[in-house]
Amino acid sequence: MKFYTFDELTYPDVPPEFGPEVRFTNRFCDPRAVNKTYHEHLDEWAICEELGFDGAFVNEHHFTAINIQPSCNITATAIIMRTKTMKVGVIGNILPLRHPVQTAEEFAMMDCLSGGRFIAGLVRGVPFEYVSYNIDPFTSRERLTEAYDIITKCHNEELFDYEGKHWQLTGVSIWPKPIQRPLPFWMPTGSLETIEFAAQRRITGCQVFYPSAAFKDSFDLYRKVAHERFGWEPGFDNFVGARLLHVAETNAKAIEEAKEAVAYFFRVFSRPVNNPAPVPGLNTDRSFQHRQRIEHDFPGPHTPFEQMREDGFIVCGDPDYVTRWLENDMKVAGYGHFMGMFHVGNLAHTKVMASKQLFAKYVMPELRPLNVDQPAQPQGAAASAPAYRVRESETSGHLPLYRDFNYVITRDSPEMLREFVQSENGKVTAGWEMRVPEREPDGFPYQIIFVGPTAEHRGSAIRLRLTTSDDSEVPDEAEVRLETAHETGAARQVIFQGKYRQFRKIPEQQAPDAAVAVQQRVVAQDRYVIRLAVTTPAGTPLPDPAAAASFFELECFKHVLNVTA
Image 1 (tube, rainbow, N blue to C red):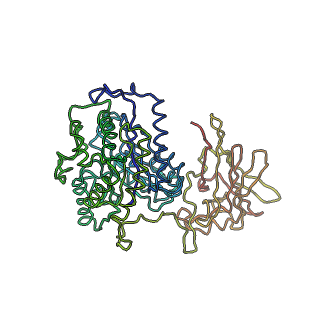
Image 2 (cartoon, helix red, strand yellow; image 1 turned 90 degrees about the vertical axis):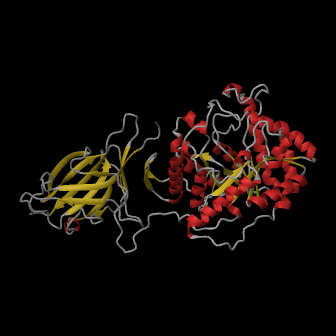
Image 3 (cartoon, rainbow, N blue to C red; image 1 turned 30 degrees about the vertical axis):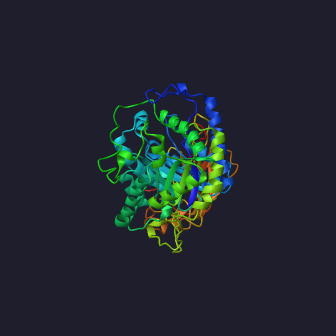
C-alpha cells in the first residue's frame, strides 16, 4: 500500500451563523485568513516527506470556500519546492474549463521541477463551475476527451496540428517536455462514462467519501470494462481510495475533535450559484447504474456522526481503530493507493499535524504490506505511451531540403528592390537585389534566415532560371552567387556559390527535394541587402533577369523579433 496526503483546502473562517442557504460570495473571504491557511497547509503537506508518506496531492475548484485552490498547480509547485523525494500530484485540473496546451505545459514544468516526481490528474468539475464559466455542460465529456488527447500529443509528439470540435491548434511543440515517459495520470472514476474513459486510457481511478461497498462497485466495474472492452487486467496499483481522516490518542478524543470540523465541511459546501435542481448535461441515465446502494453513498447534513464514521465518510479514532477500519476498506475495495484527507474542514493546524504523526507512526507500517501488485504482472502494449516522436534524418544518403520554411522570396515579393545587368571586363553579371523589411512601428526588427545544412536536412532551397536575349538559358559555366550584406557593404556573407549547371541539370526544380540548397546558415537583418547574381563568360548572350522565363525562388524563414504585446 502506498500512502498520500490530500485535502480540500477549505477556507476556515466562515461565521457560524451562515449555512448553504447563503450565497457564499467573496464577502466572507479575509485574505489574511487565506494567507494563514495556505502556509499551514504547506507545512502539513511538506512534513509528510519526513514522515514517510509516498506523496501529496492537491486539487482545483472555483467559486467556493470548500476549496480555495482555483489554480492548484501553483500549490503543487510550492510543495515540489519544499520536498526532495516524495511524489507530488494534482487531482486534478478541470480540463473542460482550461486550455489543454497550457495544462500540458504546466504539467511538464512541474515534472521537470520535481525531477520526475509529478503525477498529473484530471477532473470534469462540478455543475456550478460550468454555470459560472458559462460552459455548456452537455459538452463536458467532449471537452474532456479532446483536452486529454491534446495533452497526450503535447507530451509525446514533437510538432502537431489539431482540428477538434472545441479546440483548433496549429504548430504546437511545447517546451519543456516532461521527464517521465509516460507521465502518470489519475482521475476520479464515479460515473460509468468516466470509468470507460479511464479504463481505455489506463488512467488510475480514484474514489472518495463513499462506503467500502461503493468503492468496490466502481473498481469492479473498471476491472470489467478494462478486461472485456480493452483487453487488459488492472491491478491494485490502478486504484486509489481517499478518506477524510483524523487520528488521536483515543477514540473519544478523535471523535470530539472531528465532529465540529465535519459539520463545518458540510456548512460551507456551497457556491454563489445555487440551483434548486441538478444542472443538466453532466451525467446520463446510465452514469450510476453500477452503484448498488446509491441512496446511502453520501451522507446528508443530518446524518448521525456515528453513521458517517461507520460508513467511512470520516474515519476517525485511535491508531488501532483507524488501522482496522482501513484494513477492511482496502481489502474489500481492492485499491493500492490510499489518500488521507487529514485537514478536515476547519480542523486546527496543530491537530492535523498530530494526526499525521500518529498515522505515520502507528497506522502506515501495519498497512504497508497490503494490496501490492506482483512485479511480474503482464502488461499489454497499450500500457506505455509511444516514445517521443522526433523527425529523423533520412537514412538513404539523400537528405531532404529544409522543410520548416515559412516564406519564399520571388521576383514578386515586397522585398524586391531591382533587377540589374552589369558589364565588367567582358563579363556580364545579372540578377536581383532584395532588401530585408524595415522595422515594425513597435521597433522590432525582421530577420530573414537562410538555413544551412544539418544532420536532418540539406538546407534552404534555391531555385533559379535565367534566360538570355535570345531566349536560351545562360551557359552552364556561369557563376552563381547568393550573398547578403549591410546596406553600407559591411558584414558581407556568402550564402551560396556555385555553377549554373547545378540548377540546369535538375529536370524539375519544383519536384520534392530536387532543388539546390544553400551552403551555410546566414541571417540577414534589417537594413541588409540580399543579392542573387549570375556572372556569364565573355562573348555569351546577354542575360535578361526581366524576361518572362527568368525566375528565382529562395525558401527561407522570415522572423520578426517581437517580445512584447
